[in-house]
Every structure is written in structure tokens, then in C-alpha cells.
Amino acid sequence: MDEPLAKPDQGLMDHLQQVASLGKEISSRLKLPGDVTKRAILSCWLHDIGKALESFQTYMLAIQALEKAKANGAPSAKLKELEKVVRSKKARAFPHALASAIPTLVIEKSIMGDPLLAVAAVLSHHSPLSESLYAHQEKPPEGIDVVINFIERLIPVLHGEGIYIGKEILPRVEKILNLSPAGILDTRIGKSVKLREKLRTLPRGDFAVVKTVLHLSDWLSSAHKKPEDIFLSEGMQKIQCYLKGKGVHPREFQKKAVAYSAAK
Image (tube, rainbow, N blue to C red; front, side, top):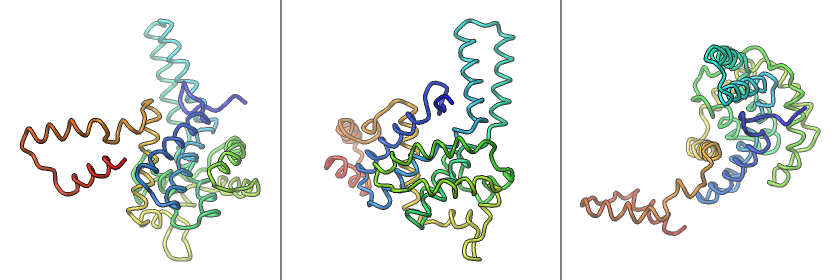
């Protein structure tokens, strides 16, 4: 099988490598604790593995066909037909964030335990972590072998990040991927709260930084930008001069941000 696509013009492994690399740099700049950093990096590596599913790949191929037709100057009728195909394939594609979060649940729980920060970040990286998120997604994804194979390829890569899992985890991932996704999220943990409720009550600070690292890394990768483009460096002096000229005095939290940026 060809290398799965993350985007019409980028392979999945290449995208994950970029996001993980950016995630490490951002985590370092934010001086996150080791455990939180590891969960953030895990989320970066796993957030899009569900894109390996055939339903998503056919969606990517449909976009490629549309873009090729546009480049070749295809008539408007042909473009409308291809646009309709793209919409159809998108609607039929299994939610990749959900397909990615399920293996993340097995992996994070196995090697790090609670709190499941990476799971929550991956699950919600395209949607708010609401109480009804994916509540109607009863049917499991089809063709999960491609996801299992992709995770197997990631095992040595994760080892390089200090995240140690073995191939023995793959049957467990396969088993849970064959279950109802909504049922998994509604499973009661220790006969108390449902998994989805547990994810919604994680330590807010830790969840916020893990999801921030994932979001920023994903966005920077897609925009072909670097972390310094969003962290104050040379631009800080321009902002300070502008504010001084306006007679505006920074608030205490802004002074702390300036001091932190200067220290970097």
C-alpha cells in the first residue's frame, strides 16, 4: 500500500514527524514538566493516525483529483462533479480524531496511566470536548488493519522519544478499535463516571497545555511556520516601543510574559 496521506500533498508519517518536532520545541519553550511533555509529544505523534483508514484516504484522493482538474483547466461542469465527489467522500470518512484517540487510550493508559491528557487532546483536536462528542458514533471504523500496521511502524519512532511500547500492545489496540466508539466513551471507569466525563474533568492546567502544544504544532506545520513566529523575540521591542509611545503601561501578567521572553 502507498504511504498514507495526511493532506493531499503530504504523507502521514512526514506530517506526524513535523508536528512532533514542533511539539518538542514548544514544550521546551514553555518549560513543561517531563510527564506533561511526554504526553504532549505522544499526542503529537498519534493525533492523526486515524487518517490511515481507507475512508479518509479516498477522501484525500478525491481532493487530489479535483486539484489536478483545476490545474489542467477542466470545464466547470467537471469541477462541480468532482467537488460533489469530494463532499461525499468527506461525509463518509470515519472521524479521524476519534479513530486516533482510541489507540491513544490504550497506549497512554498502558505506559503512563492517568490522567489521560493525550487521549483528551487527540479526541478533541478538531472539536470541543463536549459531553456529547461522538455520542452517536456507534459503528466502529472499517479496515482497521492499516491503522494497526501504521502504529507498528511508529513503535521504534516512539522509542526514540522515550515512549516505550512493544508489539504486544497491537492486539489490544485492534480489539478496542473493533468496539463501538460511543460505547467506549460511555464506559464507566471503576463503576463511577463514564470515560467521556473523566476526560472532561482532567486537571485543567495540564490539559490546556497539552492541547495547546498539539494545536500550535499542528497549525504551525500546516502553515509551514516555526515556533519563533508565535513567541515574542525581536517583535517584543517593537511592541514595547509602540505601547510606550501610546502611554500604555503593561499589566503584571504582561510584564511576566515579557520577562519570560527576554530570558529565552
